[in-house]
Amino acid sequence: MSKMAEGLKSRVSSEMVSDVNIMQISLQLLLIHHLMACSWYYVGTVESDGWVAKNMFVASVSYKYTTSLHWTFCQLGFGGTEIEPVNTAERIFGILVALLALAIFSTLLGTIASHMATLSRNTEERRSLFRQLSKFLGRQHIPAELALRIRCFLEHAYNLKQQTVLETKVPLLDLLSKPLRGELHCARYEGHLRQLDFLLLLSETQRADAVRRLAHRALQQRTYAATDSIFEAGNIASEAYFLTKGALSYVLGSEKHSVTKCRWLAEMSLWTPWLHLGELTASKDSEVLAIKVEQFHDSMRRSYDILHIAHQYAADYVEAMNHFVLVTDLWQKISDPARHDEQPIDPAGSPTLQTNRSKKSAGGTRGWLTTRFQRLVSKRKMADFSQIAPLN
Image 1: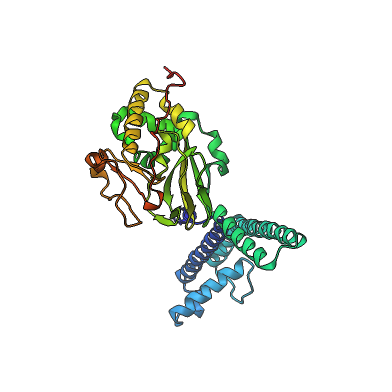
Image 2 (image 1 turned 60 degrees about the vertical axis):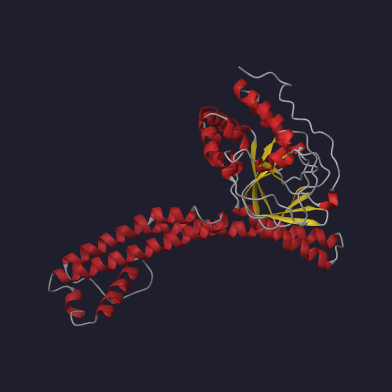
């Protein structure tokens, strides 16, 4: 039962853990009562002069069980009964039940009280926060309609925050050694990082080393509520993003594209200076991994072999981008077409704008372009990986 309860608690939100604990203890109490009732009935039937043998011999099974269960509850102080032990075996069993009540049930009931207090404290903390919010909105004379929308949004965001367990909220993880923490990060993010097209060019040893460094140094897990902005048009890109859960909406001018598949976004910021062309927002509650550009470059520079491959890949990446008249934040370069079977996205219904030479290599790339933004862009430069010498 304990293993089942722990498995259930690992799948529920933090707000419901206390409820699950109380439910677990209550079920344990009922199970103990059931076992004691069955034991008392058995003890009473061993000898023919027992109370059970004399008074419940011809009774129905349901009456026998409910009477035995009633006796066990009464022995623990929950009510009274006229049933009394009439032989030595029943009296010894009654003494053992009394000792069991002192040793176990007082502890279980105390634990229930503790969890009830925790649940009450969490509820009071929530009420206090929203009382402060109501007081602030009232004193600032915020219109009622706007105040209601603000409160609804914050209630949703608060619940989402309570359900998310970030690494920083687990104090025990601070005790992990640095190598073990690195293994933990690698196990969490390895599957997402391996979807970077660049990693396919590395050997298995180099790939494992790159994944370990990136997972430990460059990645951050973030949670966004519906309508939260991830990046806006015109801002310099300092991060690339990977959607792990939920759905995002990308808006470029009058065109809108929904992102529901787990994939990398604004990946070009890792390989070339980039300015966001559109706006990315969360369509619903979403979880996103963000990889910082500076930390990504620093991780690449820590191995000369990986640095050399990254430098060549950046040049190829920029060349592939320059095949197009315009690329958006959703564009991806794909070296292994077998890994992706999607076609280039063109929500405007017009052909994807390409230069003449892109027609020969379009099988390795995909992009999203619209006629509204048909303009020539200057040649892009690849990211400078050589500003800091590689560490030996």
